[in-house]
Amino acid sequence: MSRSDEETEEQRAWRVLSEAGLVEIRLDEFAERIRDVKRIVVVRLRELLDFDTGIEERESAAYSLGTLKGLELKVLANAPKPPDPSEM
Image (cartoon, rainbow, N blue to C red):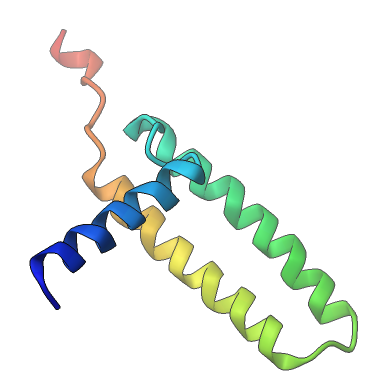
């Protein structure tokens, strides 16, 4: 892969993130957005479990939920800590 191909991939990734509304999110809002998406995936997973659907979509939803949880934990671990009121 040439350097121009790598830049194209990077530009494409940024465009997709921007179109999804993920680039403009403030860091302190990111964990909340992830929790919102997790709630939506959980609802969908419950629907899939209630109906006799193919296992592929259920596995995909469950995998997505795990990925979102991992992302949430990383965001929370790297988020700036609020000031300690006792130090003021």
